[in-house]
Image 1 (cartoon, rainbow, N blue to C red):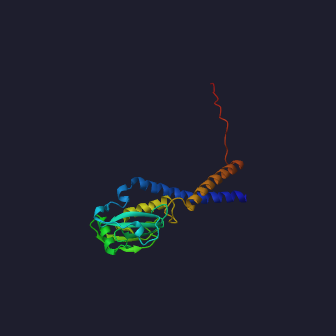
Image 2 (image 1 turned 60 degrees about the horizontal axis):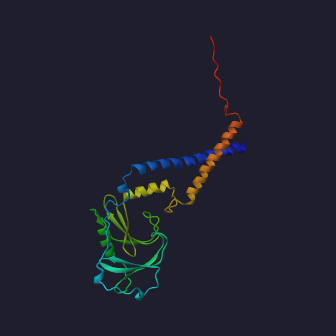
Image 3 (image 1 turned 90 degrees about the horizontal axis):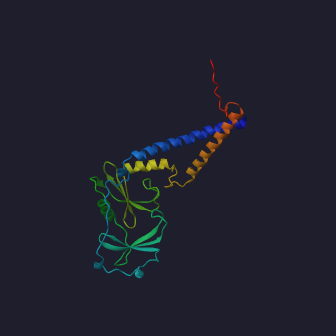
Length: 249
């Protein structure tokens, strides 16, 4: 009797937990179908820029002459029509994972750090709205607007109707992301949909695995309850079909 009551109690609590998440899935799924996908990206006011320059106008320094440890990877990048070497010493599989890198002037070999003025120019060039672009700030992770990002970034807030924020790479000044109220709402819905309540930035985490186990337990306790009800005679299953009798008058 005690085991029967315990099974019912477990089943009811699991039903509540699983049921609430199912309602969240329905609500977020409806949002994903009805949302404006263009606005939800946060790029409605973003301008995609290409940094290029005329290579014959510069005499590049040999990579071997850089006063730097041997990099894992070396890229030639352009900033304000000038060539730079982006030396990457450590990096993860994805761009947002922790990375160690530095920027060198490709003509002099001097290490270069972006100035506030340069970052501001880059941010303004990527923004097509009428809002006032604020002062750049170098910030460290974690970031509420970019949970997966593990590297420092330049953050530039814009005073406009959708509260735009521009994020740039701390070393190269590359525009990483435009965030506004529309994209923040989408990120919240993604967080709820994938049960990322621990802010892991993905869906492969222990909580969703635990939910799968809870769903399996819900099914098992439901089957056990069904069998118990049948044994007690509360649930009766008539396996034989009733025969029809013709009445002759």
